[in-house]
Length: 169
Image: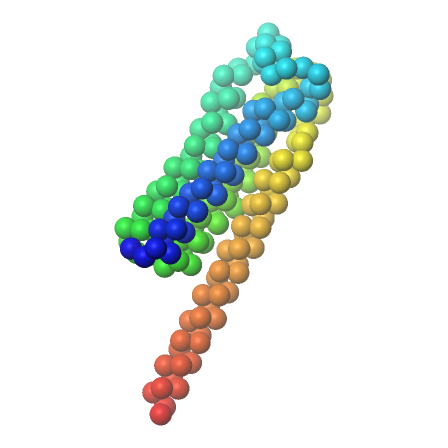
């Protein structure tokens, strides 16, 4: 195992964990407080429960989706180190996990967000900028995948060109 591969695995897991943590905090704390200004989380949850909403299920959903991303990242790190995957392959895997994080981030907002919208007769959707930060981060990860892919293609082409040049001599 090279130090670079170990460092990339650690950084990849940490970045995915940070994304998952922000996703959970945004969905469970920041967005509900922004959707119902002046209310505490306890007051919001109590009113949701009084209206028959299953707040515990919504919270469990968010925590499970956030944890799933971290579990995927840890599994990717272990497999990447064990199978000696290239740095670019490992980077693309971590970027793909972050890119895919936009889907659970959106779905997390639907679960508790719709309950809040129905109970308080408000609008659905994101109420803070942090949901946008998650989506932009996922989009940037897609861009990173493209960049790493282009890097790999160029490197492979240069390698073939050098090999052909050496064979011609």
